[in-house]
Length: 69
Length: 140
Image (cartoon, rainbow over all chains, first blue to last red; front, side, top):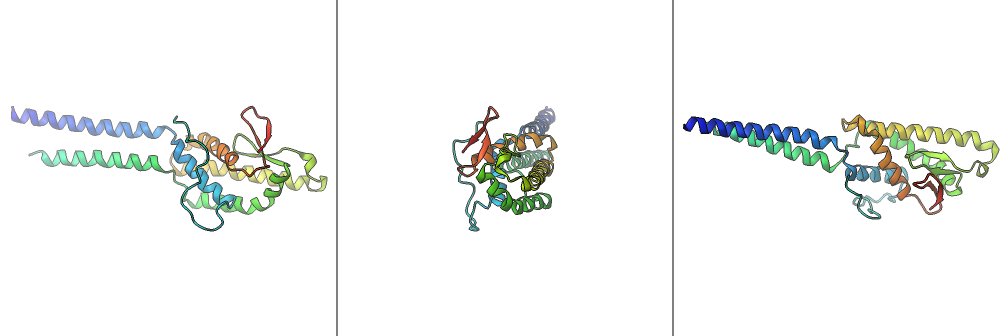
């Protein structure tokens, strides 16, 4: 009886890991729009030389937050 | 008795969650490929900036640049400007592709291009031209 409970718990934990792994894959399929904007801003700063050589924290973040996709 | 198995499983689960959170926070752009393209575009910008300012070249919705007003470019320079635009668009395509590839999601290339298209326009200087949502040239 005791052993049975234990193996049920183990099965549950295994299932949990499987679900998390699957969730990880699923979530990463979605395009991270906010992260992409940050990356774009960093590259645009460099290409257009928008930061006068002084390293300052992230983009000025103009306008509203991007809509969540 | 199977406590250690459980602990290991929880640890794996926690690592997955942490990795997932990290992957969400940033896109990888620190690759030699991205740096090389970025450097090439930065150099070219010195020649493109006056063309943006004069309205000869504008920013398109799809993250490229295009000849907006050929009349703003003297005939003798037109071929050179067209070459500049072609080279810039080639670099931009390579940049979007490289970022998607560096993040192990080549299928994100189109989304990355759209994001950049919007950000180039948002951060353009006043007086530069861009294509609005309807595709019409608009002065910022």
